[in-house]
Length: 242
Ligand code: ADP
Ligand code: MG
Image 1 (tube, helix red, strand yellow):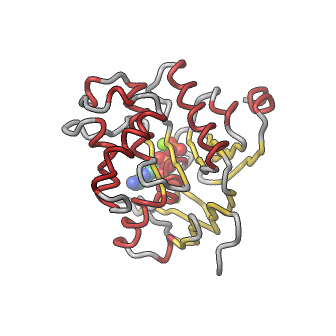
Image 2 (tube, rainbow, N blue to C red):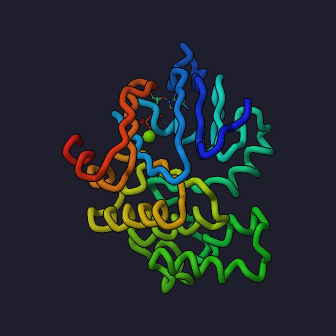
Image 3 (cartoon, helix red, strand yellow):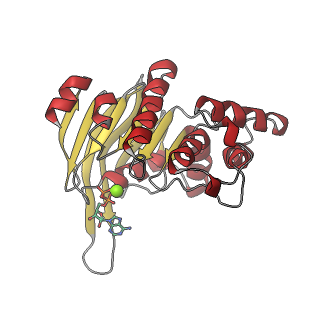
């Protein structure tokens, strides 16, 4: 099966079963959905509904037990582990709730690290590119500090800069505002919305944040590993429904 046109992401009957010690546990029951380039998708649902599992499949961090997972025209379900990890480094950027910056590297070095792995930019250009990305996120002045010297809001901006290091077409974020105060959360969501609007980035973001639904263009609700609602939203609509 070929990937079609403008779909940034396509799942076809994607299942995830965790083997576990006792009964195998089905975290995703044959999900089928298509996300177009330039969509800003909020994935919502109760704890344990499968949101992180879905994100892990899209990031190639974990594999579907059955079904198809296409991201950027690539069939993740057919890739070897080695192919997946090489693909992941350049095709998707991932942002987590707890920033996950490497404490022993400076801010600039953290952003350069994915470039060092993927070798898409010549070594001599990587620091400049990192500084540009940090500038876009409003934290260029923090470049030579270590992460521990930064506030949570600043660390998450650095994590977004790092996620964008290899110019991925898709940004995946798992509760990225979960550890931010409301002002920093709103600023981060504005950044995501700007990247979507100005650069055609596709964003899939797991969130509990009411404010996030103002920015997202689509809201997918999971319940017990199934999609129970899939709504294209405008800001006012999403807010009213939240
Ligand atoms: P959410 O992010 O929506 O809170 P998750 O995707 O993390 O949900 O988890 C969905 C379900 O799968 C939960 O019931 C969780 O306990 C289970 N689960 C997640 N990861 C594993 C794992 N590695 N092994 C076994 N069960 C898991
Ligand atoms: Mg989760």
